Length: 561
Image 1 (tube, rainbow, N blue to C red):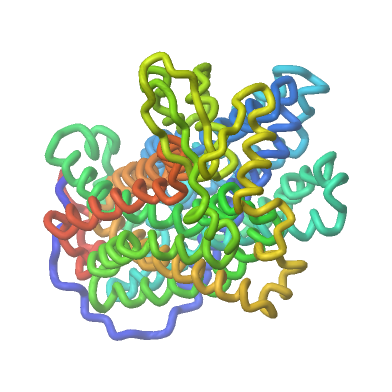
Image 2: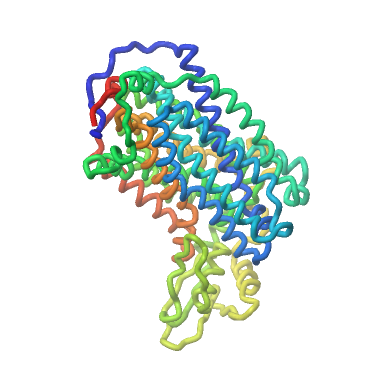
């Protein structure tokens, strides 16, 4: 393989979409929305699922296992990219992502039927993890198929706009899952929802699966693939041709580190980490946090189409790299503003309450634990972990060797014993940290009620700005990746960097960022993860990644190895 050649773009005036092109975009986008909906259901319900399938463990351990099962879906995505990318280049785009949606839909439906740990014991969590991995494998093949299929139907000078419809699907799938969960939760009440109602979104996905399969059965194979097949120029070994030598591997690495990694961390920060930050750190209730995020997604999603279309005029690279750079520069002030607005009492406490942990340095280790499986035994580590879980900012002070641990709040010592969690909570609240029912903290009573409250509106604006960053980096990325590689190995070659970037660098962002927060005692320190990778992508992309928007991907259908 060589990177796709760069002839002048085929002259083609802007024209309305044809009926067939609309059908292609609708079929690809709708099916992909349903797949993302299936995938995100688990993430949104991880705590409840942990109680159902890991009930043999204490609350903290079961939540860790639930999150690890969620992470399993991300970790296997690159392997799904290899398996289904190869199939897509061998047997065609249409048939391959018909297979992926069947795997995803059936796996999700079966999660809704799984007996709990209390019913069948350890078999329950094992089956859950198997189904999560099946979902991840299917998603690993779905995105590449949809992006390639739409791109190979699009005119050369509108490829960014056409594929940007695919880019809306992840956000719309997340939004759909949040809306379904919220509506069922409000209808049933919290007790019934946690007992059995959580299964309804999973079981209901069977109807989405039926619609998606019916739509995809009506689709035709892409013109570029049909042309290549008719001429007998298909790759016989897409994996080895795409990744079997350094020359080809270098192109994949450029796509990964010069485009996708930055896109991934901006995407996950603007949607998942923002939601996590609101709930786990600012202690905003689940309904309020979901409503605020949902409004930001509704208001910002149109940006995918705007920036996708703009990339057809000025290029993919300037928009993606600008999104990475602007996000990296503004994340710290944006999240600070989010704290000040959503929980002003907490924001003030961060500045006025001084919590110190003084201990022998030999007893204070690293708290970095992104997968949540380390066991901490030293009082210094346990105390700092407790402070981090309560989102209390602290400073670690080195004491003389052999000195027992001493925790102080504004100079007043807090006894470290079996009641430390309760003691530190009371001391922190007395010093200025907000109580759970603090009236200054943002709270909404319903979906539309958020629009009538000035505090909520300001938060929605902040979150929408971050979603706009997401649309900048994500809107043009599908077209850029498609243009990097020739038709004969396009599905295989573009899927791997996309899913390594989004499945590993992006998917593990919330857990890793929180581990950084726990290690430092600073609630904003986790932002260095997305800021660092976004800046890395900006530099590598600026110096080494070529522009691709004028490439004619139809002329390379018969490109040589």
